[in-house]
Image (cartoon, rainbow, N blue to C red; front, side, top):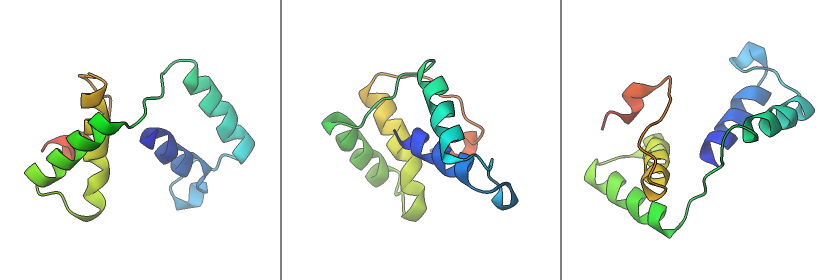
Amino acid sequence: MQNVAEFWNTATRPAASNGLGFSIEEERDELLRLESFFEVLHENAASYIAWKALVVQHRVIGVQVHDPRLVAVMQAHDIRQIVTFNASDLTR
């Protein structure tokens, strides 16, 4: 779910502000297309417990809390790989 929200943020942001400039309708259609390829995973009690352990163990502060959330959901759903353009954000 977090990745979907982040994609919505980027896709609907104006191109002049480093976004894609999609309209709401274009973004909705793009999400429907992506949902045909990927399963949307949700947070649950196990991912919350994993997230809390990660942020404490790795001393995560401020805006950095979002990447451990992705890792926690991956752990809770037994996902072992991620495709990212920000690999350095996940090095901890």
